Length: 333
Image (cartoon, rainbow, N blue to C red; front, side, top):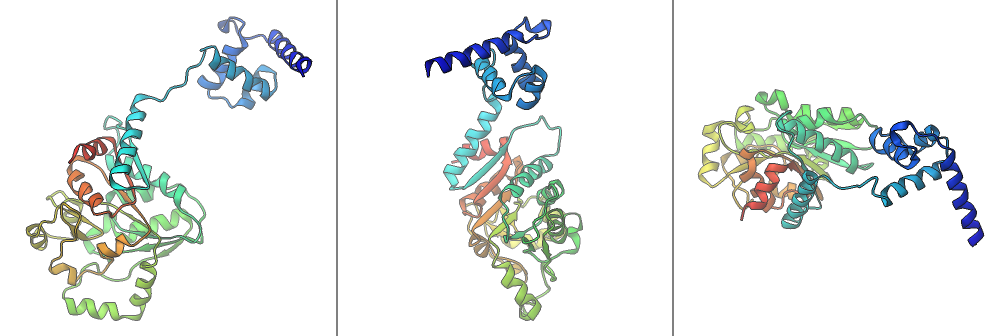
């Protein structure tokens, strides 16, 4: 055994001695291999071809580079901070997963960056035969646009809220169809208004056989994707035309500070009900809370209070947000 090890060590020394690194590496193949792998981003196979040695030798060279301190591996501090924030939020709110994206200095709109992160996460967690419910909003639409094209024909993507004329730019139909198209999945749109004129009209709609069947499917979702909005004049809910200040007034007076999937909640995440609830066609907050995996994509300083309330209500099992929002949520009592 000892002779075998000695023979292998001799062979390695011979291989190293026959290599001719470029002058800048001062004749040291260890430094050369480390440079090619870590700086030029070559694969181990490519480094082996360049050096004229086996892949096993490259593995040994890279290990020796770490042992000698030629290479030191550390996690960048900014990434450590996002990991800490992710773990703290997961622990505080009982999340199964939390993705916190680092600050980029404002190079891209925040909803696009959160959407991209959500798209990567969604492709990782979707499984065959999943039924994914989809709400609407700018961040959900950004996610749908950022999805890589994959083939998941056994997945169903289902619209969970009715439609509204004013939401064409990021409508429920567009969000749902984009996601289904990118994934080669089955698309089921909800062919009904988001808000009807009177409670008795809603009752008639909900008795329609086609809607009865659609809601059976909607309520069988095992995953759901949604965003969160606040109730200021700049809120997506108001800018979309889905709601108006006058219609929002009873909810604000009742303590509502946020909205998701067209439903209102207070600072503790409890539902706030009002006249529109008898006219809305879509899942309620209590129905959403029964879905096993609930993915929220939201962030930004104007949404911190609403996101905090949503998390306190237990509506999300997965959160995708930005670093500043995550840190602000952690600092809240």
